[in-house]
Image 1 (cartoon, helix red, strand yellow):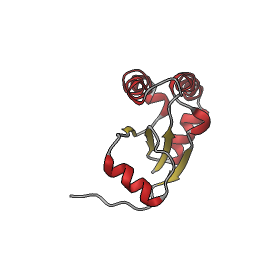
Image 2 (tube, rainbow, N blue to C red):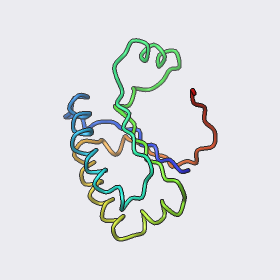
Image 3 (cartoon, rainbow, N blue to C red):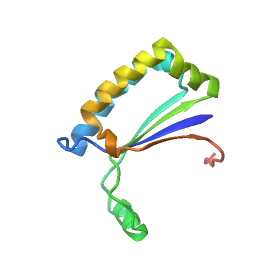
Image 4 (spheres, helix red, strand yellow):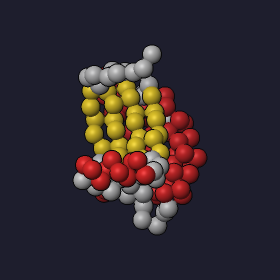
Length: 124
């Protein structure tokens, strides 16, 4: 399995609530619309919260300012990912999603990484 993790910072003119509302209610359905073309198995939005414990954990570690959220997109195989990125439908979907992301994400300050799921633990 391959996972794309996108660490999101909002556009400066948006509050965290505005950012997360747009992301959930506008961008989320747009991603869903392109599910077949993008061939992903899983898409998650993780919306960060302001919490004393989170703040304390970050301060102890000397962490930078927290992100406003994280997006995860998972493909079962490399073939699925390659097909999504090279097909005309996948490229068209990618262009539409990027145009929308520019409306609410500070792309220059929102790193992303592609990785292989190598180890995981889950509670039964």
